[in-house]
Image 1 (tube, one colour):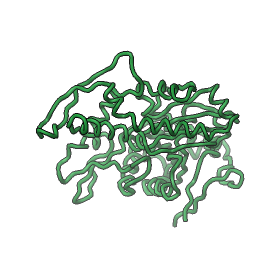
Image 2: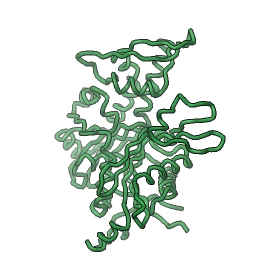
Image 3: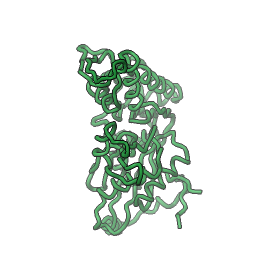
Image 4: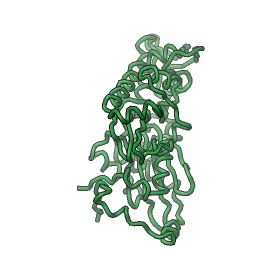
Length: 366
């Protein structure tokens, strides 16, 4: 029979306030191996308590259409995107940061959990999963149910900007304001954090995927060249930029000529790609402005002094810090290893769940 779960309210909830002794915790650590998961639209990262980040795989599953049999999960499945025969499909089961295909997400999570949790542990793991701050209650239940069915003993959720802030090492429990922008694959999370809570936040479902789609659409419209999503991602990573560079880069790309119907190679420049991704970048910057407008004056002064922290894969787009600095007149800092900030945050929560109990959520079960 399913257990009843509620959203944690520190002032009322007593479940997490119980502090076991060191001896009890020692025995408990032998019995289980708890994990933190950054369940992303593009990539899933897993942190195991005591071992650190042990898995970083694309959130992709390849399966046979007729039988539903899974052929590959992770990197092996991603390599099949755009290359599969008619009876095989490569699926990304998460869209815009939330679960689009419940069954496939569950099977993907199960595969990842089996890879990292050893059989020597007697109990199922406790799992902390990061979710977008704009997630609905229904979407929270979908995440929790997927994790429980995949083998979790207990599931906690933490909002992605909060996890990113904890991963970066910001003092989230203090009354000083910290602003974080986490640009992932499916969502961009912009939040001001103080006293273990999110004071103001904007969660927009425009991020890395939309940048890739914009590149595909730009080349199709202006050059009659059709490319796949993997090629678009490669272009974004190699020569994508959000701010004019001293020396513009270029690269050769391959696709299909929509007029002649044959394969074609052409050279594209970083200035062309900057033009291609301008619209989604403008939407992200508009979200930053909205978050700043909602920020109380006292916390705004803290942000002016401490700056904005950029995390997520989108932080690796060259010049994006300069572009945001130009638009906001605030200092902008790209976090060290921005791709792993969220999973490192879930890891810190799983390593010391008592310290971070105020930031954890348990989704409400009907």
